[in-house]
Length: 260
Image (cartoon, helix red, strand yellow):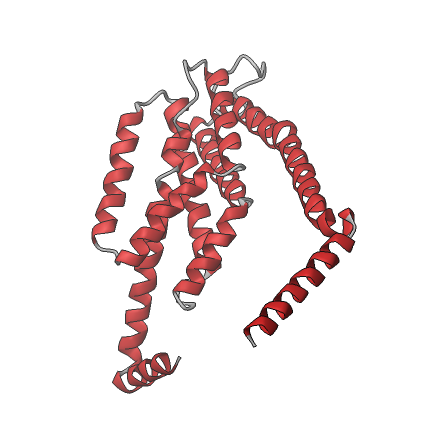
């Protein structure tokens, strides 16, 4: 019996080897080669669009926005608005929108949102996390732009935002603390970083600042703050609903969760 099993094994091994040898090179490795080629072409097209599209837009925006409220060498007719406060408000609002939209285009953000929704069993929706992070990056870009436009010290922005983030962390649950602090990594994505850096460099050229960095540092922590605030409001809303619902409905909900 043992000898028969060995013969059967060797027979199947020989037949599978014959099948592999009988396959053509393209039928065996064609899908792998096609996937590698598609990935390379996609990355090349993405980098071309990022360099000549998104990065150029960021540089132009950085050059043009300060001319709304101050005289810049690049725009002879500047400032375009006599009301300086209105011009500054327009610049900050534009920076917020650009940061919001650039973050919304990040491919990894949806993956993080879907993972959080699945792990939280639907209590924290993917769209809620995505828009909380987008708002955070937009606010960070708006605040960070003032550092370059008015040549303020970065240390004050860093201390203030980290103090707020740590304070909110003390009152948050452990699960969402990890999620919120990991969301800061979205500012290191392939879309957000080139755009933010090129915008900052454009600002520095327009206002003749010695350097154009600091916006990304400001934008990296604001998503933590907005996600923690979103979770706090979500928990307050849930507790308010449970108070209105009463003990009977709470027991029913607990039973449904146990059944799931």
